[in-house]
Image (tube, rainbow, N blue to C red; front, side, top):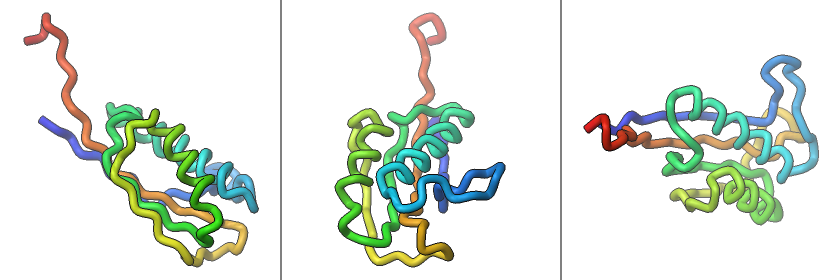
Length: 114
């Protein structure tokens, strides 16, 4: 069995205050987004290592390195398939990134469960 988890359209807007976190910093927005995504994947039984595909929308190409660094940190250097699309436009000029991921969670069994 391979349960699938899809997390779509995640931004760095705080779910409680509805304020954009880290305006102007692509790296810090990406870190906040990946933290939220990993939290959701974990709540559904997966781990950051189960993320297999990432789609990233970025306003400017100059932010690619910072976003890539945040991706590597969040996924523990697993290296999921990823696509980064530039020149995205969001409702706020301070929002620099939106990220969606797919995770494939393997059922983990111990020797005693088999």
